[in-house]
Length: 428
Picture (cartoon, helix red, strand yellow):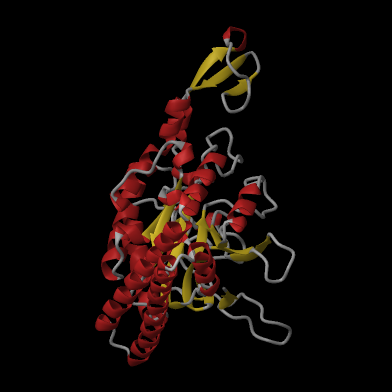
């Protein structure tokens, strides 16, 4: 009997994967304790280490029990008994800091120096955040997707990584509509007479101009993301895939119990079709297949990241929200996006029951758009997400002057007669 047909072998392998994850978490927490100076944080880390060690010991006992029952000829019952006692452990976090920036709209390296310094000051002095566990950029890194703009973005990220101890694998980047190059998109079309053209006449292949049509070269068309792909490689060490079905990238944070998928909601956009925001169905299928087949991805907090909103009064939103159903079904808990240039919080419910599957949607404002593109009442903004225990706290920050400081953005209403707060909390 092959291992795929042997329930004992399958269950034992799953337990071994869980054991490896528990050991990784213990090692991470111990390293963090060594470099930590704050006694209160050290106390919290000791509690986290104790819980992780208890979980590791529980899994070790279950493996031994499974093997013992098997040798006594109770294989099927052993499998059932073992997994009935191995309840899914609740996800609990030691303090995890995730910086969420969106709509940066870099124009030059001057932006990099100015924007970095004000951000670093705010994180360090006001938010008491000296290290980051993850950085999420939810699109529109550049303004026109040219190399000079990405040079400024690289300088900004290099400074951020150096001061806040970020590694390339801790950075999640997805493209927005400003991260595809209009000039390269235009070059992918060739003008032809309609009567001489024998190919498909749908909007995925032509731009209809009556007697003449512009015919799309599908391979050249993908190159409109080439500059973004090069920027992605400079930051992450590997190019961003130009094949649309590969544009759902998984980022595993084992020490933080996190799994983040980055999606491209701009894959159908160009200079002519500016409102075709969507998620490629094969891309989402490929990502979910990887999650199903990897036991290490179970019992993690799952977050989806893309650029465009699902809920918006404007046409440049994702109109086919079927992918949200698939994310909810697969256990995703949060979704992060940008594009609308204002911080918002919304909710997607898959099940009707109170405790059913759901996604809280966290939208970041614009970090660097020029004043003319600010939404009235919403200046420059960014989010700092703090995971601790079984709670996510979203702290929102605002900057009202182009060369000013960041401040608390107290816009979240707490009830009649109560002051609004610069943060909101979500139970996991």
